[in-house]
Length: 249
Image (tube, rainbow, N blue to C red; front, side, top):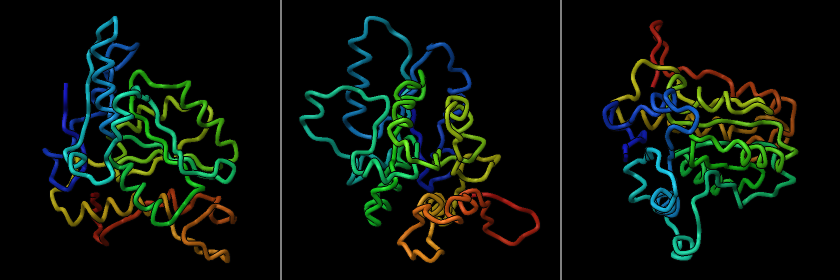
């Protein structure tokens, strides 16, 4: 089953397929819930579904914008010889230098990738979780062990904190403290104002690649100083207006 899911500033009805509701009903491998981030992933998960000797429901969450995204492309060789990867590691990092490991799923990856490329940040690893259920615990464990020098592990999502995959994945990460970077909890999946949507999307990316304010004067915080390691900016709740009655985007 295909479900359109992606925050693109088009309002509640065009943003969320209620991923959190499917994950709340997922248990003991009763369904497959995937959010492929590339043509290769989409192709191979469909092929896997057809060739498996057992059949359980496959739920695919996919945004419309990736159909035309310039970075969402795959090589013919990957389609012809590859396979579906439940977790996709970051190949553009210096493993020994990585202090921040960022886990995400879906199209938010491309917003993070764009900023990472602009900053040439080889000390931040962007990890894509393509399959949320059954959760690929062993593969996640191997990645955490691979980046042994990491001091900060983030979960980044477009959805509000009370929606999306956050409440599901935080129960699956046992060995490290996972810090959420999300929109504020909300009663509505998304705003209907594209301007507010863009502000919220930028806030999410800015929290991952936060500004350096110490004596190092880096392009972004590299977590080398005391302030960087304290996570204060990462965990800071951002307000968008000064009204007494708070609202969220």
